[in-house]
Image 1 (cartoon, one colour):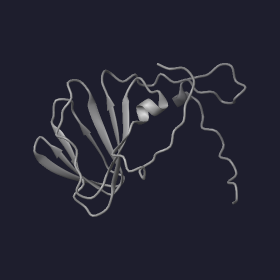
Image 2 (cartoon, one colour):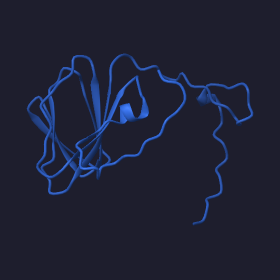
Image 3 (cartoon, helix red, strand yellow):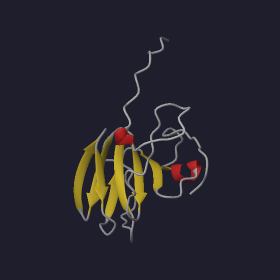
Length: 141
């Protein structure tokens, strides 16, 4: 796992089908791609040996084929597909489809975080034991 932090920006207007966010950010523990399909475009039918995938529709409508059966997801909807199932991403609509594809392999390490009450705190506690901070004033434009 890489040290430090990194930033990138989603670029669905680039004209490319895939934006390799994992590589842009230096993420090593899971896959992450922005996929943009123009009207009528579709991806390859594929499966994975070990990686499960989650598809999060940001814009448009996804026709998600899973082992030959099609499911429709709109903006704000997500689907998870197990590794061994064949899948295909299709845009049947006249509008652009933009989705985030996340993929991972192995067991998730849950609740390994430490929360701090302030930036000056030197000792933390599990997040669920640390109260949420007060809200901040909203900046006016």
